[in-house]
Length: 160
Image (tube, rainbow, N blue to C red; front, side, top):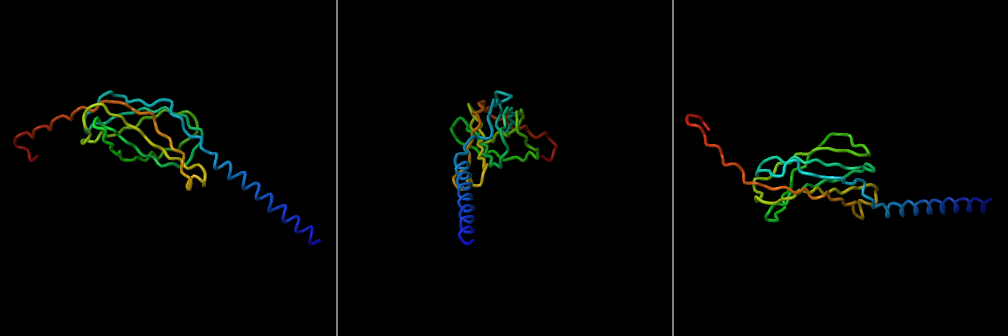
């Protein structure tokens, strides 16, 4: 009886170890990006400093995972500007989707050729919190920054 009990316990422990090893192996090999960009384009080729750039993305989501998003604008001088984050409040679904985003071009951005990129860090399983997320970068969205319009003069008699 004792020997049978120990064999049963040993078989259960061995089975759990095998299942755990398989699961760990699947988590380690899980590096497939959960999203594919099909296109990303600026809807206007030029935007003034401080103006709004409209962008249209077309993506295919294979699965939904928690993520950290960072948005960057690189100006003509090669300076990287962080673009404030946004909250969509939308419920994401797997599949094909086309959506638009608006960003405000920083007034400190140097006029000339520029590009906008989004970096996405997905954590699709618990192990990726330790070994690193799945890193995805959007296609570069190229456009031109123009000098901002000079300040409008204050009309006489107004408090400004």
